[in-house]
Amino acid sequence: MPFISTDSRIDIDAINALSDDVKGWAHAYNLIFTTLAPQGTFGWSLSIDEFAYDTHSGRQSVWDEASVFTADLLDSFELYKAVAANKAHFVAFNKSNATTALTSEQWHHALEYVKQVTDYVNAPAMLANMPTEQTANYFMGNTQTDQQIRKAAYSNEFALMFDQDSQSITSKIELYQTAKVPLYCVGEELEKGSLTRIGFLEGSMSNFVVVGGGAEGLEMVSPLVSSFAGKSDHTVTLVEPSSHHLWKPRLHEIAAGTFDNELDSVAFRLHAACHGYQYVQARMSGLQRANKTIAVIADFSPEQTLKYDYLLIALAR
Image (cartoon, rainbow, N blue to C red):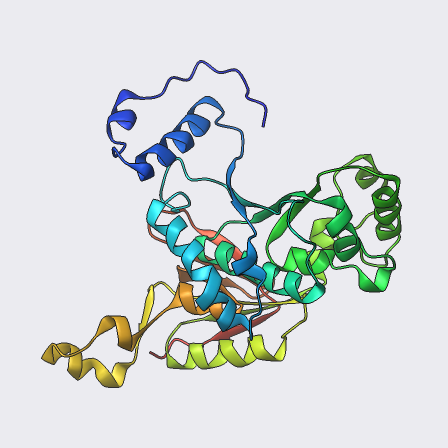
């Protein structure tokens, strides 16, 4: 990423606040980027290794055997913490061309891994330096029916970068641009109108927003996600200000001091990553039915707007 020359200097207090360990070293990089290139965007790079695409039985298996370890690592380093002034903007995932090409099933698991990790840290993903010879056919396809680019977008990828250019990949991109509902492309063609804009694509999706993470809310999101399994044109979002769900009939155990929070509560961020829905830790502060939007506000953050096609309010705890 090119730097824009500025007169910015790193604050000495910010430097002194860094811890003298690996976490502090990582935050030092974040601090340098955000100070010297305040208008730039940056992210940390991870490798898609065998544990991510190995044989898995489903989403829970991907989480238990792969995603949870990466998510815990990023969470412990706090590189993507929402309230941090120098948070990273995206996660870049790469795959070495020295490793064998993945099958369609392995890519299915790998993309689920990418989605779960980025859902957990609430940041988009970039697939960077993908080996063209290994990945072009999977993502761009030989025909419009076997293209997986929208599946990648559903897995939170905002960009896909191939490591080499070729006539074959150029032809595949040209084929993709003739699709009935293409995704998007950065370049002059966007202005000429031959490609669908992102806003139009988002408008073609059905977005279910559930407000409230109590017993009723959790019972709503899981069957919704299950009913849309494998479909990239539907999203489910849960809005809940608390980080964990506590089953109310067990409140007497909290009072008695016998309640085990680790075993008897549900972490919404973890639950969302495992079950394939979006979790927004905020409270609903307004509703515009005419525009199909709700206003949400989180601690230490300005009010934001969420669009919905279907709104389910489940405020009972």
